[in-house]
Length: 262
Ligand code: MG
Ligand code: MG
Image (cartoon, rainbow, N blue to C red):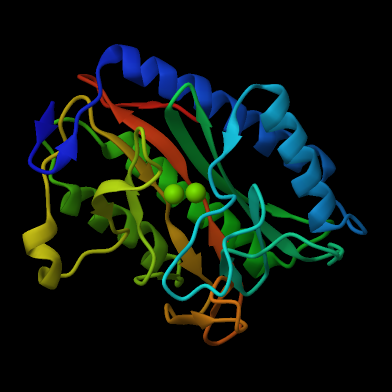
């Protein structure tokens, strides 16, 4: 069934997405346990790939292309450190005390997808960066609390933006969340801010929609740019820190069901 361009999921499909989401959750649990000073991002990715394969899933990000990219994405995880926003490629870089690490992971299982991201502090992080993590997490939790059938997405986006801007941080504009189902990226686009220019893309939340809501929040300016010539890594333009929290959420009669919550 469809609502405009948005594919609605049956209860059975939502359970399949929850099963995919559980693997994503397990990957994030592993990262939270293992990420520490001295650990290479490539080690975390190797462990994630093992975990996903052992659970019978496939890593969604591996092999993905984009119009800017020089090569397909080579890993199961995106590992983005400090000023890196998204799409960091795991490798030999070792985590350092005081870093923050954003980990994004997507899994397909039995034809259905789950997608979630989290940012973790490595060792002792500064007070402002700790607050950035708390506010970004709270922005996602606010969306989870507010979302229910009948509400326009713009109303939720304004709440997310309010949480972030009242704390003195900024919401990234250039990257947004997305519908998710059999494909990782389905309609609609899910911005975490609102301007009247987006009016034509607003939509009403309805039961059966499954949405990957993923606020990306910058300590400084909201603008971002590519961080190298790979066409993958995205960094903040002012090189200050950025955080990213994401869950795959199914809209229910009562509100939302978090499918990547474990
Ligand atoms: Mg993601
Ligand atoms: Mg996503």
